[in-house]
Length: 454
Ligand code: PHE
Ligand code: NA
Image 1 (spheres, rainbow, N blue to C red):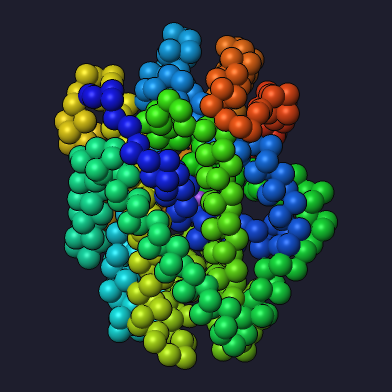
Image 2 (cartoon, rainbow, N blue to C red):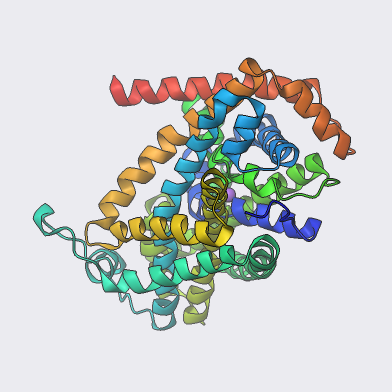
């Protein structure tokens, strides 16, 4: 694999990093998470998590990629021969995420077209489960491929792997230069429309209404850190891979701040748009906002279609724009997740980029067919739960503890970052990564085991 691949421009790298960060997590995970964890008061732990873990870890991962210039496993082995497995762990999680993340993008492609004439009808939930996903009632019937999911899924993989095939500049950078500005424009149109709908103010009121007691709950802090980790794509080897293509003179620390704040701005915007739309829906149904709040699959594929059904005008257009924004946000994240193992496999097995895309991406695509069966939603839910609960916190914890305490690399890495940037990092950064982040992640793990095993 050619080691000379590089981003063409600084904006190209930032768009790719923001493209990786901004994904389904911003649009359907953040709004409900914030609402359930203190509403307006959630912003306190959230900002704390962003500043003490999110951005410090982005700086760390950008520095590792920039300094060691390889995939995550190779970089970890360059830091310390015995720690290559830490890189692989992130790569494997990225691989697993790609197998189901791709499926949700496929659904969003179908739903873009369903929007045009609201093909989902009145019973949007029944439509999703029975007509579209064809969920099997009995276990014994599971296993059949669902053609309505299969076709868009093939399209998703064709685009993602096609982009990776073309390489860093002509593929990843160019795709993000098209996807991200388009996504921002579409999203602004949707949010402006949402906040001007009748009832929008009630939705925003429900979203921002602070419950200050939440700040004293450990769970709320766990939710804030979990959101930041997933949302910034950190601890999955992704940002290490993308930053390995940075040119020598790139300003690492500045880029990390831009990426972190862009992702959070997008998240806040999504929260406003989603809750304005939920407020509209509640007012149409004559119920309180709390009755219609949803997140995840339910928000995007059950509640949003209902909102579109109620739209005063141009419902087909706004439904289409919403699902296209999911597709664009999802694809740019999927490309980053897949690049992580494409590069990891290429370096480990001495493959060319193209061979690694065909083999690594091909295997991921074939595995993703599992979720395009009539039992697919069941697998997807289980794996997603597992990855979110255990994957994120554990890999992040091992990464920071290994680097800060076992390899004692924070000093040399901060010097490396400071050589390239006008923002200087030092003691505060080391305290965040060596102390605060491990303590919080350790508590998260403890909390998870307590909830799941006791
Ligand atoms: N950060 C992306 C989001 O918010 C998702 C993602 C997670 C991407 C993990 C890559 C790896 O949706
Ligand atoms: Na995100």
